[in-house]
Image (cartoon, rainbow, N blue to C red):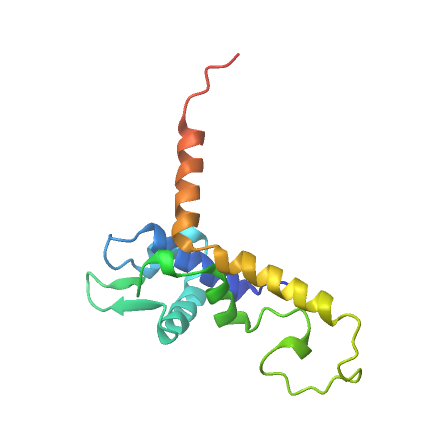
Length: 150
């Protein structure tokens, strides 16, 4: 499964807001600059995230966007599902599938598809934005430390 550019931008926007938790509302221009997202796309994405209940906005000179809840409660999987839909490798495993399987339950691949789906969901759902922010901060500190080796 390849994630759309829109989904990747959405993930990066939530990540930036997670990094800036406690800073108050963050302006679109700051998010766009820090995460290399075109402003026009970001406006649409943030509006969708707002409608989805992931972010809140404030108007005015001190306005901008902020997360609607703690980054410890946002998983990468939740945001991906919001933009992309189910994380299933095949349509027949989705809850919304109206397709009738021509193999009619005798599919030799079904256990494989279920394993792939469960593994991918597990990886994405275990990744919460608070952890991603912490990992970035640790990496930044490690790269900022002087190296005195010869």
